[in-house]
Image (cartoon, rainbow, N blue to C red; front, side, top):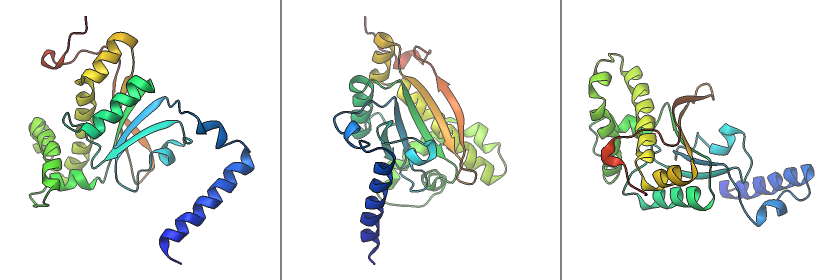
Length: 210
């Protein structure tokens, strides 16, 4: 059987399982969505947002890209963020990285990967920001793991620096920002940073909404 046909069959089995539990499972979520969380994660196929959090359809609004980056010129990500914060009124935004991230690993190298070099440049910048700490880590594998964590920390900061988040903080006292790292070997999510609404950020990135 062709692999893509297997996906279609698995979909039918999944639908059947859900309807066995609740006959209106799909009808009750068809008209609207009210997720409490926006998940900004890595595109890596081993980190499916709903699976690792045990959530159902409708509970997470999801955006994924290589190495879970929040880039101030990425209009795709910014559009998702604005819709989630201003329209869906999510209360939490989660940036989730993962140990074993290929994007972070390649950013540590000097390989020429073509177009993706431009994207991984943002992770190289994270390394430069934290060069003293990272260079002091002698074991390469540990340095790699720490860069994964620091990348998540920087992306959460990038969220706080957006007018979208600052405006919501000012007028609505939400959302709370979270930085998590998923461990592929254990399946566990680890919290790296939490940023509450109204937290202090570098003055150069602040905006006046009065």
